[in-house]
Structures are given as structure tokens and as C-alpha cells.
Figure 1 (cartoon, helix red, strand yellow):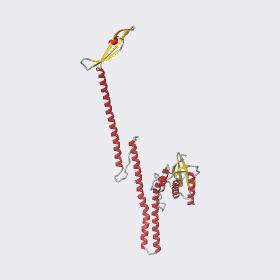
Figure 2 (cartoon, rainbow, N blue to C red):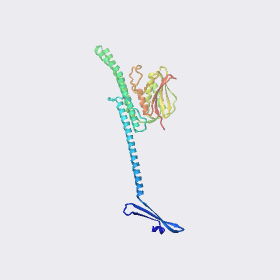
Figure 3 (cartoon, rainbow, N blue to C red):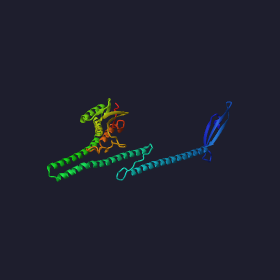
Figure 4 (spheres, rainbow, N blue to C red):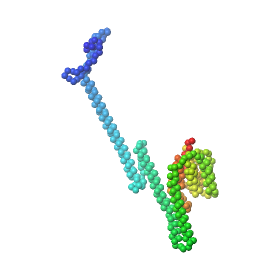
Length: 355
């Protein structure tokens, strides 16, 4: 107070006698006409301040605890949701795959956009490929059983008959017939090896740029010399740069040409054309002949329509090899009936060279 009467603002903190309570006192002079007329002193104990502080701490603790409980419950719920989705995916996998390894169902893919949905999509894709491979194995067993039956019967009957005759000429005829059966078996095995060797060769192919139009013209010229009685037409083709393997593209073209030769109508031409679509160019081989059955993908392995048309064994691998070559070059395959020309068309795509 004395300092305030002297014109100075003063603040003091002291403890009340016989108590733990602190008091904060502030004194300020009062001026009038430039003279000190008195002083004002205010005192406030720290009890209210401590009370407000305790209330603030309590409120902070309540809010923190509430947030902790809410976050813990949210995390628990989220973890439970993830666990249930993973358990559901596990149960689907258990129901989809039989104990003997057969694929007996499919996984229902979630529409969510998270890692578990991606995992389910991956599982579904893997199961789809495994199912396709199982169908391939089943088709192979059925096709090989069908194809092996005839040559084995020829060999068996020929050897049995040769052992029952004494005439050297008859015996030789039966042995020659048995040899034809052996040759047929070798052809079947060679066709199987062709697919396996191509899959291995794709891993070591050296990619190089080349002009697709020049390759088609050269291939058709050579193929026409092998089949002089047939007419091959190459529609006008401008320069088309491709990065890939010319040998593989030539092999794919030969497979399509072989297919067209086997099924074309006599006296009609076999046409080859290029169709550009966005970043791909399709090599299409068309011929007039029987239509493609609906809902049948002839580019799958072990699928063929030649059972009653050819004496030579065909395992349905030719167009499958075309599919492998097209996928290696970043393209796809397609087939279509062309009612306007009463023709069918088989195509394989190649990715265009960006340069």
C-alpha cells in the first residue's frame, strides 16, 4: 500500500497466518489532477484458482478417458470386422477347394477397396487359373485316351495278326501297319512337346524391332509355295513396326493358316489382313467354311473340332500356341463368324512399337 501511495503499482503474495492459503494482493495509486489522492488494493486467495485448475484437470481427464474408450472401442470393432472378413475368406477357401485338390466352387469377391478385398481378388484369380489348369489336365487325359486308343489298337492287332501268319509278305504288311501306329503315337507326343518347348522358349526370346507387313508377305509367299493349289490373299498393308520375335509371329501365322487350310471351302481364297486398334494390331486370317460354334473358345488348350474331319491326330494345341505367342507380345486373341461373307476369322494381337 505504501508503494501505491508513493505512485507505484505493487503486487505481493503472502500466506495467511495459521493457514495454507495463499493471498495475492495488488495495490494501484489513484490520481486526480496529477496528484495522488489514494490507492486501491485488491486481494484474491488462490483457492478459487486452484478450484478452477482442479475442475479443468478433471474435465481434461474425463475427455481423455472418453476419447480413449471411444478409440479403443472403434479399434476393437475394426479389428473384429477385419477378423470376421478374414475368417469368412478362410471359410470360403476351405469350401472352394476339395480335400483332393479339386476346385468345387468360387470365392465371392468383396466390393470394398482395401487390402483384404485385394487379397480375396487374388485368391479368386489364383483359383480361376487353377480351375482352368484342372480342366486342361482333365481334357488332356480324355483327349490322350481318345487319341492313343486307335494307334494302340492298330499296333496290338497288327502284332497279333503277324504272329499268326507264316507268309513273309503278310507278316511284313502287318508290321508296316504297326509301324504306322507307332508313327501316330510319336506325332501325338511331338505335339505335346511343342507346347511345352514354346512355353520354355518364351522365357529366352530376344525381342527385336521388325516390319510386320514384310513378315506377312514373306510368310504367305513361302506358304503359297507349299500349297500351290490354294489362293492366299494379303490385303494392302502399310509399314507396321513391331517389337517382338519374328520367328514366333511367323509360327503363330502358320498355325492360323494351317487351321484355315483344314476348314476352308474348296475353291475359295484364304485372306490375311491387319486391323489396327488403339495400341494393338491384329493379324487376322479369314476363310470361308463352317461357322464357329457359339460359346466355344478354340484358343483354349485341348479344344478342337477336327475329331471327325482328319485322320491325323490333333490335340487342339495349335490355336493355344497362337494365344501364348500373342500374350507374349502384349496382345490377345479373338475369333468371329462373318455372316456377310459366310466366313470365319481368327486373329491374334500384337502391341505396336511406341517408336
